[in-house]
Image (tube, rainbow, N blue to C red):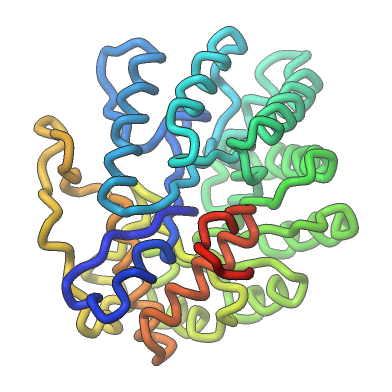
Length: 342
């Protein structure tokens, strides 16, 4: 989920630690399983779009001193173009990592033709194994269930292909990047049925469930991802307060899921102040070094950390340390922890 935020002057007492500890997650456009959310949509070729997306990810890395994990939501790039997309990812190796998987709201693509239901899972497995071998892919996902948006994909199709993707995940052997909305009973049942094969577990990102649901997942060994959507209501914040630090991960889920002024979590921001050095511009006027107005940019991860710290009544550096260590350990990024044993 992964990118360290840049810091502000008031972080000075622990600046070196925060610069590498808070993690960012960015979900990609449903139109492309590899495109960074920071890529502007215009009349460009697919390869040019990935080049521009790569530039924006590099810029986010420059501002944030961190490591992004870009998660796909579909499997729709033509096979003839996947090598080009992967080449773009390799060009920013060491800066960006990816996952492989199909979002529950995009699972109808598995049923587009009479043969796609059998061909796509096999292709997905092959792509995941190749990406894992390359070292660029560190998780399988974003997969799961979303019963809040059944208009995008019916429940029966979501269930079928969550199960099939979990079976692929068992064979691939990567940590999981999971999505669950209003579907906990089916979600947990399918995970339990394969628990023995999911040894590396994973994270249930953008968590908005109940305290009881969170504790059940934690007891099974799953991490809980927190972003702006996890901080909307008083109930949300009471759940976040109870997440054990050893199971906490932080994310933006940009360009969506920002923490808004109306969110309950803003009451816990304390001394948080937005970065003065960030220049915010309209997307049409984007230049290198700027962030885009109205978009949940990677640099906003600090706001999530401050809110979680306020809710828990502990220092933001404690939250940052725990979240970084949990994500680095889970996704095999321990080499980035300078001299620390995970």
